[in-house]
Length: 222
Image (cartoon, rainbow, N blue to C red; front, side, top):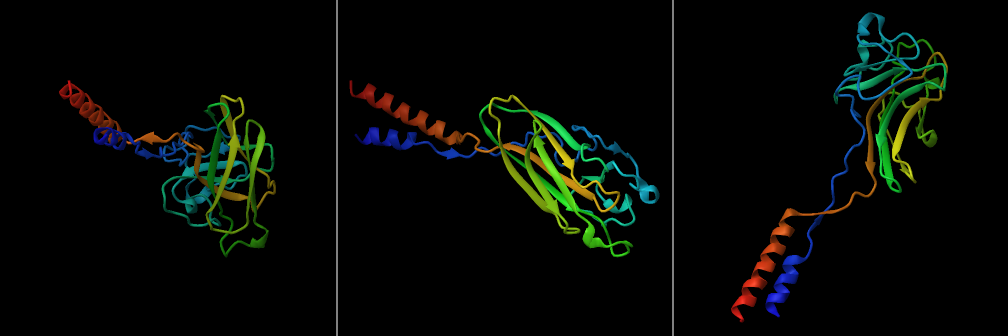
């Protein structure tokens, strides 16, 4: 009985939650302008003079100040998608398609910052607003609105895949004015909501040890 109890104790699973895996490629934009598509025009080197003056343009940079003289001087955690908004709400800011498992729940997240405008901006800053629509397979899964200049805000929402094997992720900008719709995107992620727990490697070793003890005990009792 003592041996059996030992085997049971040794065989008790030691479970660790699997770390969520980000299914989005280049969600932090550290690899630059790759892994996603956009209806906006990419400007590879906006520079401190020309910047992103035109609507429906974007770049990938680590400092927003080099892109527009009235935008926030934002530096810090690596690359970001810096956007000058479009005048058409049908334009896709960012899109990527990922493989998913049917009948599972996934979490989608992103960081958003309103970057217009600094104190020298000639118009009313209180009018500045960013409203982004997040869609999967053409179905709206969330809307994020911010008018807080220079403050990172997080969007987090969930989506059930039903029988889908692919998820077409899209972000669209609802604000279509010529001004006041400039923003930064970062930290895009899509993860399985409840990843399957995995046994610790030590569990398998202990179970094996317990079985070995049982075998040896059985041989001695013969």
